Length: 514
Image 1 (cartoon, helix red, strand yellow):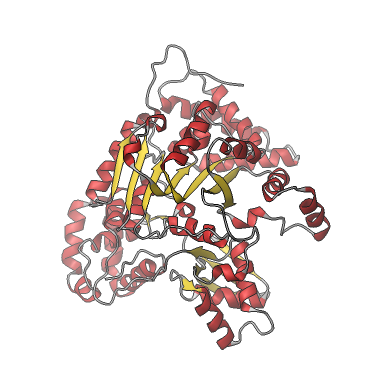
Image 2 (spheres, helix red, strand yellow; image 1 turned 120 degrees about the vertical axis):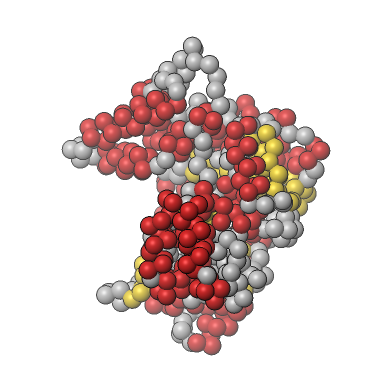
């Protein structure tokens, strides 16, 4: 079913009416993509001085975050929405980011004058263009990607999107013909609530699944709902159809960023063997797995250069990479297991003592990403893993997506002389408190943390901050009265809260090296 807009409604830029949220996506970080490629034997371009192209950049949340995190790179970001490009340019100017440019261009009109790029990012765009433009997008990526370049292309996937499309069609049907967008959104949320309530006493697993999906959608912003579910084009693909689209290009599928999804490792042996033997190729195995897991989203890594490694990487592939584990808050559970979590509420519970011991080595140092060799040496020296081989266990954690690889080193930052965070994080704290760190993770700051970020605008030392705190708070209170509650909290308990704020910056990869 296709629900068309009312014929009498004039065409509008839906992003002007309802801006897309300022998202960033850690999986698109070129250092992460490069590490995945190198696991499979592809020599990736050095990230630190790379040329990076982002197609469909929206309001620039991802491109701006990359520009702040990789100041020596050159980033070009394009989108066909003029309003979104203007928003991105405005924030780039305020944050004084000179290594990123934003262009209002349709992908079909992309000029060869832009040159070639080491990395190309197209997050979700393939699903939000009409089917006739999907091969155009992939040919465009092919034409601008350097011979040894790497592309990241993510898209909504079938069969998982069949159920979501049912919810989307329901909202589109109920909101058909509504203008402006705010009215369509109101109608969409109305039918979601009615449907959720209607299924309350329906005991089937399908009803429970739909209720969970509806509850998730209801928690999202209007911008997410409008552009994820209510755009006229939303074209999910089977993985096998995506591979067919690649045949008209020189691009080749290498892997998924989510490494654990490529193999049936969580299945019992009686299923693993038959599945593997049924598939005539690794790609065919992945399609089988998509069916079984009901997968709804893919994050594909594409290359031109043929890989020299094997389909299943070995520990040797980790030798030149840097590894990190983001769940740095640890506590022992009553059952003897270990809880690892971060400041956003993500938690993982580990029962196996040897796995917990390895992850503890990494968690202690987060956000530092350490070399494979240094982790192995420390594990052996501390004899924490006893009979377990550190190399094999570390590789298992990487392939399961628990330990994250990077091509480049990541440090904690240094606050010994000054407390410096990116100018982008400062401007985002001023704007709405949705700030991005050096690894593209976003945090919605509390009023107190927003106030703390703004106290650091001129990168003071801790001693200077403590000495001038009263004057700084007075100045911010006059400029940002909405932060008065947070400023008052800091003023009343500065000896406790300033060190806590510094720990937040350090452990969540906001702190720069100065």
